[in-house]
Image (cartoon, rainbow, N blue to C red):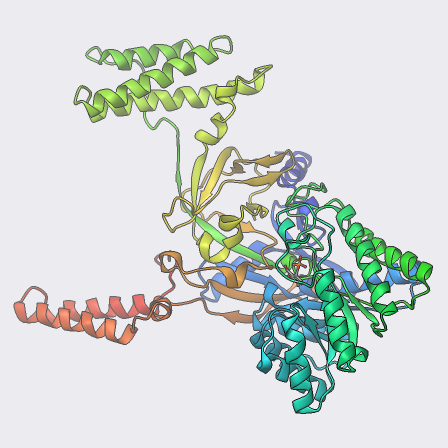
Length: 639
Ligand SMILES: Cc1ncc(COP(=O)(O)O)c(C=O)c1O
């Protein structure tokens, strides 16, 4: 292959997986066909192949699967959001400031929160807490007195006490009133502790959004005050002489909002509430727009659920412009803008890496050159269908083959066909389907019954990961994540495939992908090479996936490794968290690993007494038990 051909093939392959679209400059493919993480370090643009990181991980003894967090990307997202708002504020001559808060629920992992609060300090980036546990995280991590803590969710007296103490410690902590009953608790605790609260109200907007989270919007949304309740809360505050504590107005119309028009409509309606709350006598000064800034998981730039039809700059300009217009018209001072972007902050920085263990094919394994003389009639019939296959007879031959295969299965059930003959029929059947697939592109119009052919004969690549543990949204809400091989992109992939995990659960598979041509039920993958590992990456998995995962089949947490790209394209592993051992996951479901080991020891000792195993065999056996309990829950290659 000439250098030019190789480059062309690499860029074509990169284009096929859409990495330049969904990767948003954080990921790309280099000329050697390797997927790289990109970062700017000391003004230098650097590209580091993920395969170099895999090699580094394996040298350090970390088996796949691994969740890789790339700190530079997380930092870059925080900068991008803050700097985009700063530019929009300057462009629209907006008089207020921007203060981002990261909703802890989107990724609660300690190292992520540490990085957000440490790096975000230069922008006064704060945290959003939806529970007492999250408030404790926020209070202990935020050092910047100018950053905000926004408390959403149901709040009991203890939650309020914690937040009031945060005020006492000099933190900007707001309680967002979600239900009318909360106001009484806030006022009572404030009186008992002698600390004035900073209060926010969450309004329920009528504006509806598109996308998966549409139920978060509109009058039937679960959280927030209806306008009837809002007026009653204002009256309660006024009666208690506490209306001066109402400093923030909040709304959240949904996560992953794909259509910018919905965002603009929401902001417009929110402005009306803000202006009227001011007229009611609330001082306000902060408007919190919640989350919703979407991630383009498919890279298609459309208003479909897994995409978005706007850039970050369009989002910030649309918001700031709408606020300016409305507040200028009403002669209301410009408030500080808060957003609670979760997904758009953390999704890009995590990649799930795993190796492929095996491939199951729907191809003929052994095809006879012609049916044997004593073959059953059904074998001869399906063989003839295969021989007659051409572009003109395609539909008829496929129908015949399907019919003969069903008949063969029925004859087998009745004992009229041997398993060997059935296997010959199936070999011929799959050969016919594969040849049909190769002919389909020549057809002007693909008949409806052949439109799903690609899916029905796609290979199954078994990946060393658990969908339920590492990609729960792929299972629960059919979330599309970008998936692709992280190497060998100088070779064109030839095999349409779906990906199965190792839980052996029929739901444990990825069979919806996005590529340059749109959504697809299969993904093109390379032929496995004997003895070589084949690595895939699932990208943009930093938001919502880590704590929602479950222990299906007792596959535990994967290893998590945080990496930082440093000068000259080097990188360092800044944190390595060992995944769960088998002993760990057993203890999560209330087994005691020591007792399990003891029970196995007693069984082995009895076997020695009976003379069924030797003492040496007993020792080896107990070593296997011990190593298993200490070992990784995922498939480990023998080293
Ligand atoms: C109140 C609130 N704020 C912020 C978020 C984060 O949203 P996103 O991840 O879309 O930024 C959510 C998520 O649903 C939320 O409920």
